[in-house]
Structures are given as C-alpha cells and as structure tokens.
Amino acid sequence: MFMGICPGNVGTLNYLDVYRRESQRDFADGGGVAARAIVEGLFGLRPDALAGELLIVPGLPAAWDRASLRHPDASIAFERHGDTDTYVIEQRFPKPLALRLELPARRDPPSVTIDGRAAGIRPIPATESAPRFEIRSAAAPSYHVVIHWKNGAQPARPPVRPAPAAAPRGAPTMQTMGTTTAVDIAAFFNGRVTDIFKNEYRSPRSPFVSLAIPKQGIGAWAGHINATAEIDDTGLRAAARAGRGRITLPNGIPLATPGEAGVRNVVFVSQWDNYPKEVTVPLSGRARGIVFLLAGSTNHMQSRFENGELVVTYADGSAERLALENPTNWWPIDQDYFIDDFQFRRPEPVPIRVDLKTGKIRAIDIAGSKGRGGPVPGGAATVLDLPLESGKELKSLTVRAIANEVVVGLMAATLAR
Image 1 (tube, one colour):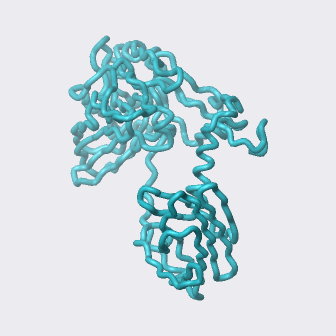
Image 2 (cartoon, rainbow, N blue to C red):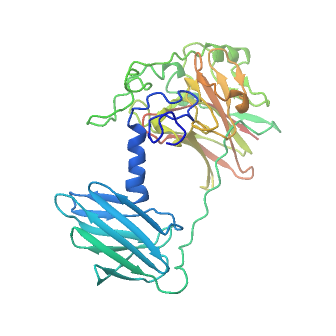
Image 3 (tube, rainbow, N blue to C red):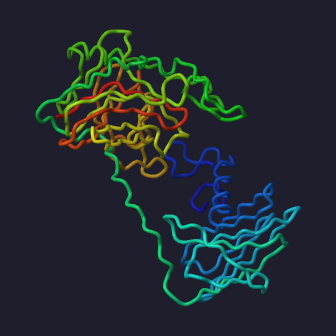
C-alpha cells in the first residue's frame, strides 16, 4: 500500500512478487481479502441477518487502547482507560439485529453496563485459547457497552496440550547402516504414474457453480481449463532395469520400482472416486526408518496445509506419521516450486527429486534454485523419509489422501534396518 507503483491500492499482486511484480493492480482479489481481514478479523464484525444476530468478536491486539471502524452497515469504536473498556456500536441494517459481543477475559469477573443499565455476561466454555465471555442485548440501533474490570489476578488459562513433534521434512537424512529391505507394494499398485492427468476426475464435486480444478486434475480457471502435463517415466524405468528392479539414492539406499514398460508402478489414493482414499500395506520386523518414493498432484488451492499422510503403525498400536504438506515436502509431479524470499518463501530443507524422463536424481540447492522452479519435462517424483523406533515391531504402512482435488502416489518404500 505504501511502496508500490499505486500507493494506497490493495492490489492483487505487489512488488514483492518477483515472478509477476505489480501486474494486474486493478484486480480486487487482494482488496477483498484485506477488507475481510479488517472487518471480520481485526474488528470482528460478523452479521448474520438470517439468524437476526450481529456477532462481534474483536481480534484487537491486547496492547491497543483505542481503535475504530466505520462501515456503511455498522460501526464499532473501542477505548480503554485503566480498568474500563468502552465499546460504542452502531448498526444501519434495514432490520436491526440482536447483539452478541464476544470478548477475551482480562480479569474475572467484570461488571458490564449497556446504555447505563446493568447487563449479564455468560462465560464461554474454555478452550486452549484465553478464557472468553459474551454479552447479549436485544436489537437496537446502537449500544454503549462499558466493561469495568475488577482488580485481581488474570484468569487462569486452561492447560495447553503440547504440540506434536514436527514431522520429518526434506531430503532423506539416514545413512545406510546394516541392511535395507524393500517393502513389497507391487500387489497394491493400482495405476501407472504416467496416467495421473489422463483420467477424468468427475466426483465428488460441488453441485453448484464453483472454481473446481478441471476434470483432468490439473489446471485452473480463466484460460487454463485445458492445461495438462505429459508425464514420461521411461528414464526411471530404464534406470530400474539397469539396477535389476531398483534405483539407488546418493546415500546408498535402494528403492524398488518396475523397469518393464507399461506395467503398473504406483499406489494412488485420492478423495476423487477414481482411487481409494487410503491403502494399507503390511510390514514386519523392525527398522530405524523408512524411505519413500512419492509422486502425485497438488495445486494453488491446497497450499500451506496437509494434502495427505503416511502412517507407520507398530504392533503395539502406536504409530509414526509423516504429513505431506504443500509446499514443504509435498511437491507436484509436473513441476518444481518457484522459491523466493518473500512472496514464495520456503525456508525448509528441499526434498530429493527424481526426474522420471531421465532417471536423474537431483538434490536441489535451495539457495541456487531461488527464482527458478517451473515445469519439469516428463515430471518428477519426490523422496522423503520417516524415522522409526528401532525397538518396536512393525505392523503396517498406510498412505492416505486428505485434501480435495489431490492425488497422492506411493511408488516405493524401503526399510532401513
């Protein structure tokens, strides 16, 4: 808004986007998101006319002592003086809505007045966030809400469960020690990796107008509905034939994959009906880790959250889990990610890539690859690993699709003993 070509404009693209810079400044994509973040997020104005309710859940920083917003439909002004908070709320809807004001508890309990009259509060059931309460009032054009906080200690926060350990991400770190065992997944192969964009993914889809991904499973709206990528695994198959049914990573770990032309070579899972949502393969013995060869799809709308997962279950019922997240470790088969310090920031280790057309194994240098990325001729698979508890007996490996419009493919798995 301040350093761009058009100061004050919340455009769809900005100068930090090294790929497109400030092209298309007139699009409202960014303006819509910014407006919603301010109106619904920062000030918490969330009217529901069908329910007859004006819900307000301010997200103001605790250090702020004043803030105000004027919108054509409603306004809110907040001020804090010592132990007193004041909210002045006005609404200009065709039909006034009942007020429900939800706030964090600074201290417990406060006394509240609305337009000079005492008002009750209702505690909201505790969650992992700070304690909260709500104030309700009948429909009226405006409200003058005054909250007097009593002197005393801060309300106790509910205990926070420790966050689960971060899933291993990036290139395999295990060095070959002892022996390795290829997991026999051939009986579970349900497709050829080259067919991923040759299918028609028709269900489940919304019955309404939507910007869903095109039926071939790749592409987007506005000129990209016929997009595709030609996946060619001849190089991988040739390397597997030369290696007697396996390829070998730079750290010496082998991955078993078919070398014969045309045979199935992947276990696909997806929320699309074309494939099962998950597949479980039996395991046995013990291992200190497992290495995967994966290939599949993802897209812009599946970014920054889990697309799928790999779960290794032990005989005692406990399990290890590797989350597949775009763009951290779940890379699309058709291209490498475009990485940059700002708009496309991705500081995590980069996984090993296996080019399917040539069989080349690439350990990407993240510093040297910034500003590059883009389509990979013939496509590429990704290598990931998951450390295991070597003292536990193994039971099974499950590959599961989580996000919509994504296909996750397991091509090989090797146990490091």
